[in-house]
Image (cartoon, rainbow, N blue to C red):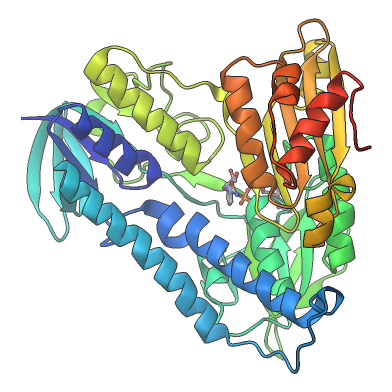
Length: 460
Ligand code: NAI
């Protein structure tokens, strides 16, 4: 009997398996896909970042190098080479996880796992085995949500995986949903020359974000050439009757004709085929597995983490949960500070946030001070030609403790790490402000915003 079986080798599952093995547990990890790494490595975070980087370079070379004194001739797109770069990134990552499993002595099984009873798992696929363990961790992630009336054919109408692999730039791409996936992948194809129309049900984009940032992002994306229809509920999409392409129907809008449709209306927990009924484990109304603060499900010895449980669907959140869960199993302690989990949108400029938003603080009746610094006042940002956006730090009015930070601007995703650490350490805005930040760096924008909390900004 094993100490631990992990079902799913995404960032939540494989990290948990490695950590458990480091702690001396005997661990097996079951994954149905031949490549390890889950959605994130195979068809999510990593390939999308490769395409975002390539498309940004293409766009900058074609439209933006002149102002830096670089003249370029005819800029051409080699989409096949872009896909090759993406595949290289993916393969390096998935093979890397294989290597880490070997190094840490995690036994890998390739196949679909299902519970046959308490502590018992059957693997079917390339490997066919019956396994048993004291502890079983479900880390099966999520899949794209289906939208009623919109049948995905994986070709003209598809999800994020389809949109990562288009072999030609669509003439007109309609994106359903102005969430993270819609705007990141919409950015890729917009930069490569597609007309991109985004249809969003809500009256704002990027739900859950700091409202001020969401409004600014909408302005910036419109300027880049995105067309938005907010308050547009898509009710159907089907291949056009004549002339090819797709017709999209949305309440209150005339039908839209386009070449391809990306459905990006959220994701749904992956529990199908897991045999949860064989251990008496039920999912909630949203199809997720409910857990307690130690990731224990209603069934003793069965745990769940990541996209399959409630909470934001983020690779790094799943990783933290995986580590906390197995550390608790092995040592008795393990904890995740959900207030210090950053969220990042990898558009241009990037958008990042951690801790509380202004609307959350207002709703909770917490008084706070705001420190702000605009990228345009930072020397490095000007040299980079990246002057759009700002850093905003929110600190408790009474104690100066950092409660949240929200950044729209160059490298926001890297800059937010400092504030996440500050929140984790219970730091004050003054702690950040008094820490030396190298000059000239974008990180000075964070320091200046922290200075701004006490009205002491120097360069603005
Ligand atoms: P999302 O939940 O972020 O956004 C979906 C959007 O679709 C919402 O704004 C919603 O109002 C809209 N919508 C739903 N039904 C609609 C309809 N019938 N018509 C028009 N609009 C409709 O979901 P998304 O972008 O698909 O991402 C899925 C998950 O993956 C999210 O939890 C996201 O956080 C995560 N993710 C995170 C990334 C990152 O951290 N950079 C990157 C990609 C995904």
